[in-house]
Amino acid sequence: MLVLRWFRERGCVHCLARDAGVSQATGYRYLHEGIDVLAEQAPDLHHVPTRCQGEGMTHVILDGTLIESDRLADVRENGNDLWFSQKHKAFGGNLQFLSAPDGTPLWVSDVELGSTPDITAARIHALPALYKAPANGLPTLADKGYIGAGIGVRIPVRRPKGKSEQALHVDSRMFNTLLRHVRALGERTAAELKQRGAPCNTSRSASAGSATSPELPSSSLESGSDHR
Image (cartoon, rainbow, N blue to C red; front, side):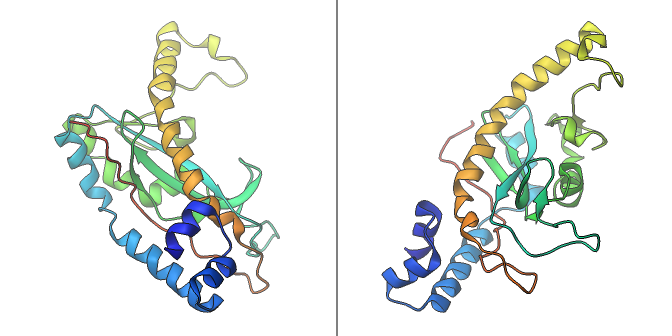
């Protein structure tokens, strides 16, 4: 119950532990153990393409999002904050995810530093398992943040440097429009992740370069929807 309340109510662990009749230290231990149990239920990414093909999906959507937190103390040698995302102008962790064509979450990566670009995080966690899928009719759709991802990952056609998208051939512009339209449903997964990750912004800075909040868990979000 403590774990469920932490996810649903965004409550502080001190209050949740008090309500459960345990110490704060025990509350954190229960929380970590509960998150570990949930994370262990996640299927391996290598099984996801096979499942998608078996359910007749035409593609999967790859994207990343920032799960915001309070400021964390880790810094680079140059003084820049490791957990600060220049793209989002906020502190947090970078999560990569795959979603079905209808926006249903399929898989979520382990967390990377908020300063990690999406393409870097994807190369670490997602891309190696996705390269074989296009040969079996399951391409991956992504945005321009994944330029250079490699074979089988459909990304927008880049416009000429210093020019608008109108400088592209009409076929390229139409491709980009269709790709944006199809990918838009993936935002449903991002919204769900942000809602479930909201308790992470109850963290506080720690003096020894670590955070007092629980780590963002690796998980695969299963839905009751049937894609068959």
